[in-house]
Amino acid sequence: MQITAVTPPLHNQLVEDYWAQDSPIHAFFTYKYNAEAYKERLAYLETKHYERAQLVAIMREAMSVYALSPKVEHHLQQLKEGAYAIVGGQQAGVLTGPLYSVHKAITVIQLAKQQSEALGVPVVPVFWIAGEDHDIEEINHTYTRTATGIHKRKYKDRFIEKTMATTTEVTEEKLTQLIHAIIADFGEQFYTKEIEQHLRQAAAESTTFTSFFTYLWHHLFNEQGLLWIDAANPKLRQLEAPYFERIIEAAPTIAKQVTAQEARLDKAGYGTPLFANADAANLFYVKKGARYLLTQTEEGFTTGEEHFTKAQLLAIARENPEALSNNVVTRPVMQEMVLPVLAFVGGPGELAYWAALRPAFETLGLQMPIFAPRLHLTLVTPGVQKQLKLLDLTVGDIFTKTYEQQKQAYIESIQPTEALAQIEEAKRMLQDNYKQLMPLMPATLQGLTEKNEALHLRQFAYLQRKIENDALARHDGQLKKYAYVANEILPNDGLQERVYNPYQYIATRGTDWIRELCERQLQTSYKHYVVYL
Image 1 (cartoon, rainbow, N blue to C red):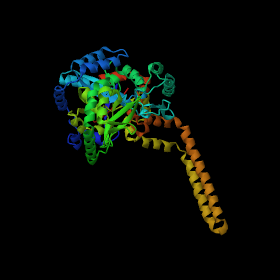
Image 2: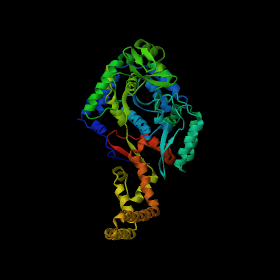
Image 3: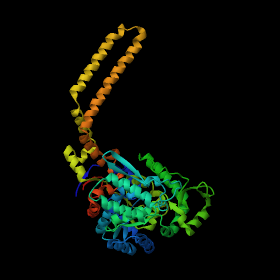
Image 4: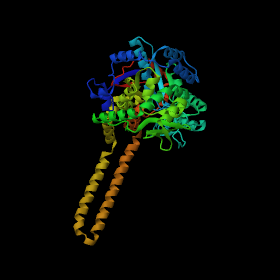
């Protein structure tokens, strides 16, 4: 496996500024991203207490649905005995969601190793699965690439209620239909049959979106020792009960402070990623597995249909915390109260909204952890490498879109220029003849004459298109190579990691590339890594 670091193919001002040491964006975070920050953060965490035994028992019980590797067992024990955590998270997307979910996990695993060695203390990798998320339309699909283009493959069912991923049921039949469509798109690759068998087994043993995710996720990262916890786990909710009380007590201040912080962020030129509202409770009420957003009122809190006084909501937090759920503002502070977070690993979108969250941490007497940008990777399969070589292109040519110039030059080179020139000459002569004819025509027939000329010109244009398309069709194989490499490396003019799922690459190369990337020590930086599988 060869890995090269390149300038990010797509510009993101916020990410670029975060890596600049003198940027104003750092005023929105507690730490700049450097080695000294980890030492300072560790010193802070050493003064804090966490319910480690209870947390590890919850994690072990959930993960033990599957076989636990020795490394997972070791990390669980370390966490129980005082280890610190590198934390990342994502929604429970089908086939683990877009590639960046895997990239987050790889970053978490690598960073835990790096900081354990650098700080001389146990640091374990933890993945926070957002099973409480209710945006099913965001997680129920994936994209695949075939010779005919990029396709959206979706779990076909209707979901009316705002049920959480952990409570939204899936069926083996519909999962199998989705798997069949995806495998058909992959085509006959070296590991296709093995993948299909594995995915069908996952479908047979899964009852919700989250359980389908954890089955696959655990298989991918068990040997690497990645710990995981579902945010919607009822037993985790019990552990979080006193933390929900703290959030409810501080809800008015959190909402006002975060709204003000986001206004400052917008003034600094970074936009409003949260669209924060001073009346937000930044919590959801959960009823029959569905989430309903809470807002503040003069009397307390409401979902619009149900109303709670502050005392009633505090009682729910104490007695039935499963009826509460965090939102984008309170999830990070909940992680901070539950886990000894040395650093949080996130992507550009998370970096944007985390920039507004410092006051939420400080309102609760907490410190914002280090924000560690995840690794950004583009995978290049042997098939893509072969086509790039045949076209005399590089990955960089795709990123910069300079390949389009080469493609256009090729298209022009295959056109029958002599035939097209003769058509242009015929058109010129026709127009000259009609120009001479027009003054000779009676006024009553001039309109008809113009229409007649236009008719002939349309016929010439039609013939011209047919000649051009015939040339393209005869060279379709070569043109498809350009489409193939572009759709692989920059699909829909976006990053590969935001479109495809990992199984498209597992079909070709198995899972060794994931293991090898976990074992590599890539530098977390502004660079974008191109991985030649």
